[in-house]
Image (tube, rainbow, N blue to C red; front, side, top):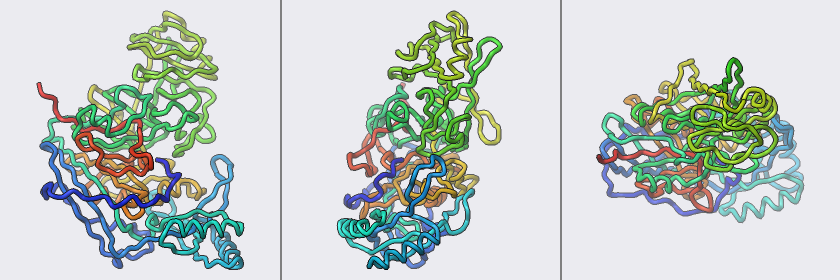
Length: 539
């Protein structure tokens, strides 16, 4: 999820389709979308929801909705940023939330400079593993009807020596959003005779839009999937930055214990669980841990692998380094192999070593490639003799220790964090690396500010719920915070749910046509993997 641009110009209000039927798909109670820690009084605003329902196939229905709070009128404002130091990297940072002493000093300096600031308290959302108290204070100036007026005021405040940004109060968790446009798909495996699968469309090293994959596969419904690499500096674009499995084959490894959507038996059995992966290369009596599948050796997007620096814990949108690394490339890696220092061994379909040499080239059809740097290169040099065999063992486990077996038709799409567990909101935002209570500059906008979101969950009847909310559209749709996403999924009946990739990646397509409203100014974003609901093929 890219949160570089939180303030976007108005794009117009999305229209809710009418005349599609009003059959009750889900037992939905209108969510207040106000966390218990919010300071606004939800009783002061009346939320309304309008739904339009369409049945695409037996067991597959889609609802389009608009949640409105007509009493809420967001405005533009100027936020004064608090300086800090990243706890992870040591680099200078800026945050919209700071300490009491910073807020008091900043307020005084602003008044001395002739401005009229206000200080607002921000509480932590109700995460399961974060403090349940005041997060900090923010300092803002003015309330403007247009973005241009706020930008003009921000320029004057910046000239007076302050670091500023322009903010839209509709993204604040302290008051309800004035509008949120949502799409919800419900797939009942007891009735639906098709399949649901996570897919990288045959090549894990590519990016394609959700709707283009949906059109190519003639899917009924599609949403974007997990996190992926978006910059050459972080690896090969399109490759997953977390656990991914497609048609029973592991395509990427977990980075720490993070949430995943497991679609077993073509989606007939769906569940959400935090998963880890262990992959081992074995040559005779010697073994070496494989730390990655289909990624650049030494670069681990979102961190979370043993030995990575500066942290071996998950950190969202951070690329960690690994000096001793062994990476496996599968036939689904349809790009040139990474080059650079180290050693690679080319294996045939049986695991027999065909050649050992410099890194580069392509994965042979039906075969695989192991690339090592540091200790990984040393192990390959010692044990990957041409003609010998290297066996690769893969193990996926959930937090209970239960092993997840992959068979044909099984797929896994992962992201972070968990939203709902055992029917209760249970957001492990710290453990899954999307916020840091010791560094308020990290993850604040990602988690605690309204954003476009894609969510997936399962209800008590085993039905799969796929949902999106448009965001970053002032005057159109503002999105959810993580806590609001959890509340929304629980209101739909989810007893398990997770947050998938969001921001500019959020997309839902129905019959190959995009129905959500992308937040990127360039339109629908090309993503890594997607979740596709496919009708049964005729004999």
